Image 1 (spheres, rainbow, N blue to C red):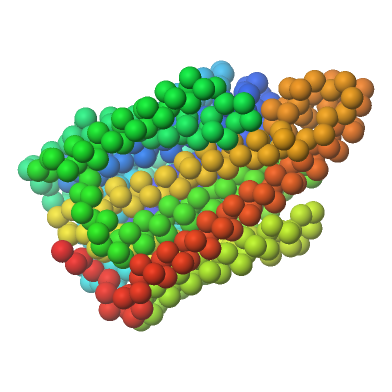
Image 2: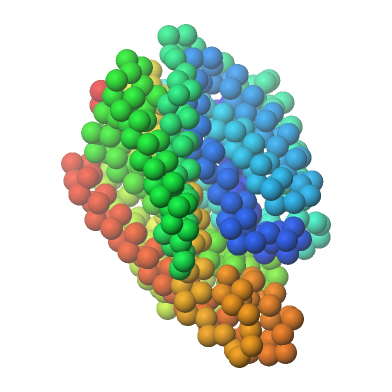
Length: 490
C-alpha cells in the first residue's frame, strides 16, 4: 500500500505540472515575450514528447525493472524542472519542457505496472486504479489554483521549481519502500518504433496547427502531412511484423479496452480544452488575477473528487458501461451548460462542476478498462497504452482547440479604424496592441466580444465530442453492463 501511495503521489504532481501552465501562460507570454505559436509549443512540447516515448517506456520497464526506470524518470524530471524554472527565453523553456517529458515518460507507465503487481485482488485493484484515475483529474484541476497562488507571490519560474521538493521526497520514498517487482529480460526495447511514432505525432500536431490557420503555410502543411503518414504508417507496419511489437495492435480488438482508451483520451481532451479556455478567458477578458481564474477553472475538481472515488468503489457491482457511458452523458450536460454560461460566473461554475462529476466517473475507471484487459505479463504495455491515451487527449486539445480559438477570434474580431492587423493574432496580442493605440478601449471591448464568441464555438465542439463519446462507449460496452467483467480476457 505504501508503494502505491508513491505512485499516486507522483501521478498527482505530473498532471499538476502540465495543467499549472494554463494559468501561468499569460504571464509567461508577457515575461518571456512569447508569440502565440511559441506559447502553444510551451504547452505541447510536453505531451508530444511524452506520448512519443510512452509506448517504449512501458516495455523497457518490463525489461529492466519498473522501479529502476521509475527512479531514473524522477531524476530527469527534477533536473528538467530546474532548467525550466530559469529559462531565459521561450526556446529554452520549450526545450526544458521536452526534457521534462522524457522524465515523465520514463516514470508514469511504471506507476500502473507497480499497482498491477501490488494489488492481487480484483476489487482492490479496481479501487487502486480508481484512485489513480481520480488523482489525474485532481492534479489537472488543481494545477490552475497552484499556478495562481505561486504567481501571486513569486516569479513565473516558481511553477516549475515547485516540482523539485516533490521529486526529492518521491526519490527517497521510492528507494526505501517500493518493491522492485519482476524483470523480464526477454522483452526488447524498440527505439525505431518509438522514433516512427514520434515523427508521426509531430507531423500530426503541425498539420492541425496549419489546417486551423486562416492562411496556412502550404509547404509546411504538405511536409507535416507527409511526416504524419510516413511516421504512423511505418509504425503500424512495423508493429504487425515484429515478434515482440512495441504496441500489440490486437489489444484494440477488445471492446472494453477500446472504450477505456476513448474514455481516457476524450475526457482529458475535454478537461484540458476547458481549462485552457477558462483560464485564458477570465484573465484576459474578465481581468481576473491568475489565482482567481485558477479557482474558477478548478471547480470541476469539486465534482470529480467524489464521483471518481465512487466510480471505482462500485465498479464491481454496476459495471463499466454505466460508469463510463453514464459519466460522458453527465459531462455532456455540463458542457452544454458552459456554451451559454458567459458572462455569468455562476453558470460557468455550475457547468464546470457538472462536467467534473461526469468526467470523474469516466477517468476513475477508464484505466481499469485498459489495464484490466491486458495479460499480467504485458502490464507495462497496458500502462503505456493508458498513459498515451491521456497524453493524446491533452495534446490534441491544445493543438486543435488552442489553434481553433485563435482562428475563430481572428475571423470575428472587428478592428477599430487604424488598428494594425497584428491584433488578430490572438487576444493577448490584441491587448498588447490596445495599450499602444489611441482607440485602445474600443479594441479591448471588441477583443472581449470576439473571444467570448470563440469560447462558445469551442465549447460546442467539446460538447459534441462528449456526446459522441457517450454513444461510442454505450455501444462498445453493451456486454459490460454488470460488474462481472473486469480482468484480463486473453
